[in-house]
Amino acid sequence: MKDPVTGLNNRQQFLHILDCDISDAATHKVSLALLLVDIRQFSRINMKYGYAAGDGALQAVASALEQVRREGDHIARVGDDKFGLILSGVLNTGHAEMAAHKIKRLLDMPLLVGEESIACKVSIGISVYPEHARSGDKLMAAADEAQRRARSTGQLLCVAHDDECAEESEHWDIEMALEDAIHKSELRVYFQPKISLATGRPVGAEALVRWENDFRGLIGPNEFIPVAESSGFIRPLTEWMLNSALRLAGMWEHRWGVQEVSVNIPPCVLDRSDFVDTVISAQKLWYSATNKLCIEIVEQSFIENVENAFSKLNRLRDEGISVSIDDFGTGYSSLAYFRDIPADQLKIDQSFVFGLLKDRDNANIVELIVDLAHRFGLSVVAEGVEDIQTLSALKKMQCDIAQGFFIARPMPAEEYHEWLANYRGINASGVISTSGAETARPLTTD
Figure 1 (cartoon, rainbow, N blue to C red):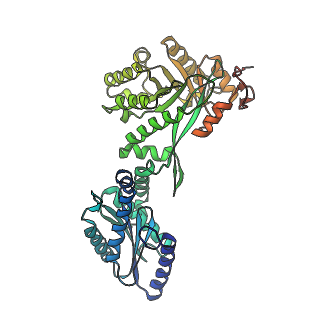
Figure 2: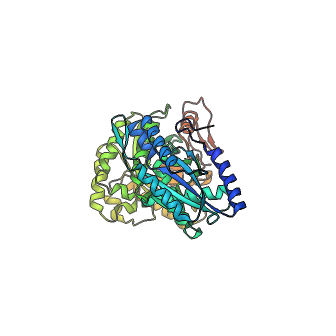
């Protein structure tokens, strides 16, 4: 089948042709080049100017490729915003680079769609048979990696390289895919419940981001959060999390009263001058009488400018937004910290909770944190609770709230909604999720 927008071959046809061309090149002992041409920020063109503009950009690139194509060459639309060009019988990569520059020149003039003038910028990746790969799928992978590298560095084109840059390319791969993850609706909000140790009732949930990429599958936060922080994408990612978590929480229907929705705020986002306004705007936009926003920050957030950070947190608390200190006990705590910090809650780092039953020193630290926090009017959350014995020990220590796999793993928003509606309470056998009860069962510790 042909692509309906451009009239070109589709990806499946192109891959078949590529395999055939490689076979011919091998027979005749000649080289061929593969160019992958990607339209930069294509999803934003669609969002800002409409799908007609997006179709116009696709047709403009297709037209440029047609003008570059020689007899025996092949072109196709191989992705939403990506085209492939096979150049047969090339002598070296220089010929492919000349073709890439011609494509750029043909697209230098702004694209007119209605009354809109749109700049159509592209990134081009080049791989050559047999220099970079000897099979169609590997040649495609090499060109795709080169194209992403060109895009991430702002260059017109890049040529495939060897494995020594694989780790750096992986970083570029994630960084570039992150740019489109929000627009392509690949990011998901998961919620992990928190329960009161005094009553067994749910009191809220921590919002966590998960990334389900079309090509790479599920990408863990440990992979993409550091990339987001180093690339500057952490700010829009955090704003998306704030708004998405509050929007989804506003849909919860349950009998448990006001629930706290916790969102993690990285230090670099807290440092921004517009941070407070961003958080307050999100809260006002998605206001719900049954939910309360809590921001979780790490101790590191205060290191460089304590006065400025405390001022921002006080402004948020004045607006009814709670502040929780995450991973408490691993940073730079002092007794003055308890006295001065503008927070409502301390979250004990899970490294102390994991060893609570086996290490008396850990137990002493947890007891000390709980006691001091209560003396200064702070509630305490223990994260990383994985068994009933740890849960019971925390209750005896008068810890306020528990979170961990024993209660529930992080789950998609729709599953959390169901969990919240069906939850009954906790007993010595674990979490009971049977609908119909009107009150939670108190936690038993015997």
